[in-house]
Image (cartoon, rainbow, N blue to C red; front, top):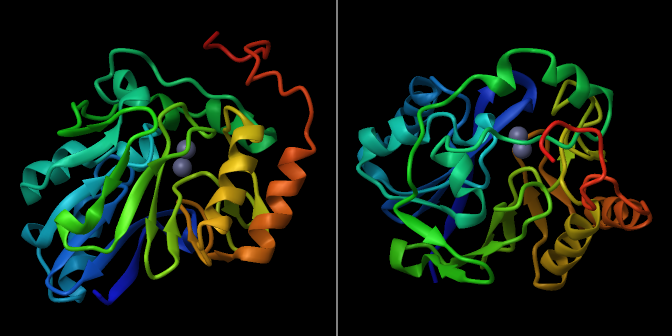
Length: 253
Ligand SMILES: [Zn+2]
Ligand SMILES: [Zn+2]
């Protein structure tokens, strides 16, 4: 039907933080908005492809962490495009509730000691609010694909699944050393924060069953099916996750 192209937008170098553009015919959809102040970087990538902010017809925010939602309000003002996000993260988007973080290792714990994750971004109310279990068809926005609720990384995490067999999954999976990073980009890792690895494992397997072949992510990537499945099986074998059961030592329960 439509030919879609995935254009990565490096928010930070070496794939440490990515946003993506889905380009189809004359329109495009922005998936994630980067850290606060990313609009110039995103504008540059648009210009490199002969596009302007006004060509963005929809802004999909995969979840409420600052490296994905940080510039969403500003980009909505520049593009006039609506923001699509899931209601389970809505109180974080509006800044009503501070974001919670279940760390998966020392990178996450170290990161939490820096001001970065606590820096407030400009709050917003999504224009299109997905509710539990709802699927959003992107055909109305000129792209052959769906947005589905995954949860797992944060309560309101969502993923874009395209007919081209590309999936844009935010932080459901990451790759490389540290976050993204210089080395081992083909090797899947858990992101520094993750609410519920069992849910993430289930959703990654479902995405593969539904036909996803290339996984585009917020940190590192892209990854293909064998590495995604290997990672899902590792996650599934983690038992009794303290964060998922609300028994962790993190500061949000
Ligand atoms: Zn995240
Ligand atoms: Zn992230």
